[in-house]
Image: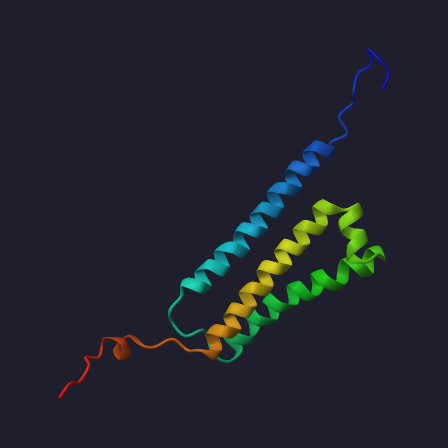
Amino acid sequence: MVAGGTVRDTGVGAFYAGFDVAVAAALAAQSVSLVRLARRHGVVAQGRRRALPLLWEFGIPAAVAVVPTAVFRVNWKGLFLYGPDMSCALAGIGGLSALTGLLRVIKAGHPARTRARRSAPLRTR
């Protein structure tokens, strides 16, 4: 830049603002899903209804782990070095998705007690 010259806006600032808003929205949606699942006391869906969210919740982290390294032909260390914004966003979205899937598997393995069992009076002699 020459002294006294004008700076032309290339739109990079607007791109990063949009990118940050999109990442914040994706992370917020994943966080809300994780919190709602953690607070749910009922039994998780059975059969196909249980398998589809698991495919989604474990498919995203798998895709996040494989696709960027294959597309850019660099390992994760290089991705974090040369594209830290995108790498952190992908790691956050993939991590939250994996946590949601893991919690869903744990809840499916340990069904919650029904209200009838919890409210049954204790028998004493």
